[in-house]
Length: 362
Image (cartoon, rainbow, N blue to C red; front, side, top):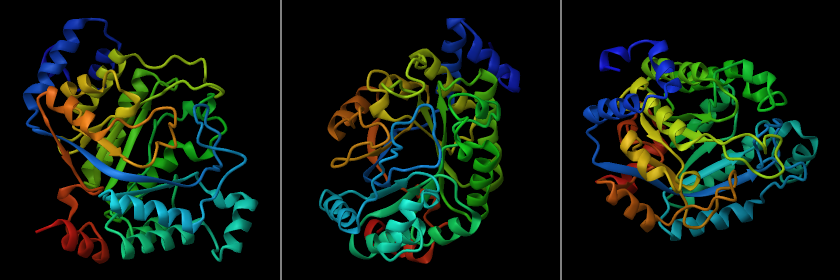
């Protein structure tokens, strides 16, 4: 397969379906010829799962709990202050989508003095900016335009996983009970973030029953929004992991080769300035090899909090990650939750920009 054949939708699909090892070797060569990276980046963070109830019932999720827990303000502040002492720079705030739809959550928030979860979130992120050196990043499912606009004031970046742009998956075990996974709504939110000039993270989930065509379409949809608005700073290629007790417990996980090929396709489809990320805790045995396929970011790594979405998969030690990275011929470099090219008044609120300049820029 020559380089000129990677021009059309069908070319990428054929590559994902191919069993020709020569096609993979050639694709790695093509990606390698365009690569100029010297560093693999990561963000040192704290993970704050503000509430683990969610209106969605995804077939692969263990985060959502009917016996939910809403974190108290004191708990959140303790984590933020501890993260500050450990030199973390990112505070990842996450919770289930539209938790206010749960009357018990809503009542609990009211007793705490808040009309809803976003008012509580804004208060906590405001406190974070005033009392620590951490920069907030929010990923909490679907948000409306005005909600994004409000949160931009106290966030360095935001995100939502597209997962896949296939409406067909809404009829499968993965998403049939998850109204918030409607790809039209997710793409609309990503577009609204672009209109508001919010530095943004998105990604796809591999292994939830999608076809090769649906993978390529999803990546092309992300590319279209990135080219129009320029706000997508990174795309996560996340592999489905089977877990005991989930509806998709018996689904096969994507093979290392499948992941490698998807990463290569993402690298060829997405604009060159968009980083490709794989979660290192979900790819302990293979992540190092994925660096050779174009991955250039490890995402958030926390020295003090676990991955509450994948609690069975602990983060690697940062020094271990450094060794893996250097063995592959690259250097590990810490970054902020907002990428360097977005650090300007065009992309950030005055408050966030002032904080970055006072703390992290000479």
